Length: 324
Image (cartoon, rainbow, N blue to C red):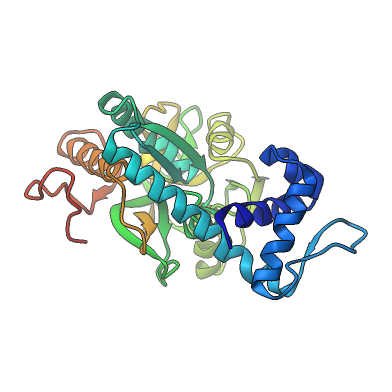
């Protein structure tokens, strides 16, 4: 069994076509087919059903091998990256994931600071909901991700380091009258107003709908769906109100913040694969993130109710992994 054979198998599984898989890898289709046969002979079972009218379909054995193959390929790439950093062949790479609200609220500035400090490190950003990001981390497609940690926790294959605790508040347009003269409102009061919510898959959407369900009320939707930027623009335009994390109010003078009572909070964590030692580039990203948050919290940089949960470990040697 070789990594090349595993890469051929994963390519076929992803595109469901021998021809397109061979083209994506830059090899001849007979070569790909021959190597995949050799892999199946080595494992003692077919991985792909070649007789399907809809193209190659994974067999039960193929379904079982696919996640393992993805992890083996990701681990091999991590090993190459780590060694390349040590011997000075290149500056390294950090594949970062984050939810859309965190990209708006804090990550854009962190990536700017990181790039200024480490211009030779290649940055790759994936913006998605926490659940897809967790799956990408487990498969080895990301190095680190800022995700929302639900009360039961997330995948045990991941190490999570809580970094922020932020309040969820009601956003309304400053062009309209305030939804409450008290500066606060209950979910019952909120339910009387038209609501804008992001698309399915957003942690924020689930938290909002759960708050309604817990209060025993039904939301009145103005608009459902869209990304975080679209939700905020719809609120600014007066389409409705939305429940959003406090971080997104920074730099948005057209949004008014009204707190919910009782308060709703969420915890943001930096997550990575627990079975992989972070590379130097990943450690540098973590340190940059923590230092940026510490500086921001020491001044007046955070809007609303945001609490930093992890400080930089100044006692740790440069490049060392702090106790977590």
